[in-house]
Length: 175
Image (cartoon, rainbow, N blue to C red; front, top):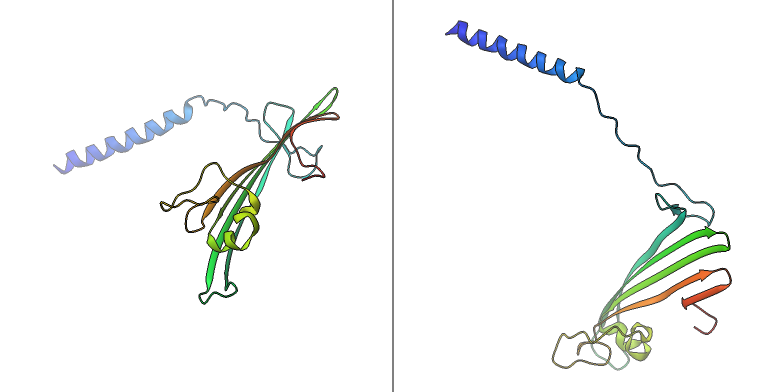
């Protein structure tokens, strides 16, 4: 029995050595070249080239959260409120023979609770009303539910610029 176990052990070791030696002799496949993201310095900081194109792209934004506690005039109870805001900016630019072609998009989301909504004009969110009413009860209000909570989404900017022409929703002196 001992000779069988030692013979089995030797056969296993020989098989392992032969297998690893065979794997080392196999031809290796070369990986396809990878096109990494390159920095685009033509339009300022934060831009990069979209792989395979001459278009520069910058993706940015911000997230802000607020919490406040206070007492309204004549109210015996302290009130509190929260607000969360998020913004996504996408800026794409391509150099053409006739000038720069630019596409810009800014999307904003806001979620506020009652203290913010009842202390600002137009029911909160700086007058921005989302599509439809959020409902937390059977008594919806103009800017959210009966508790004063509201959610708003807004396409703040969305425009295309080509040379001196700007088309879309852009900021102006009248905003």
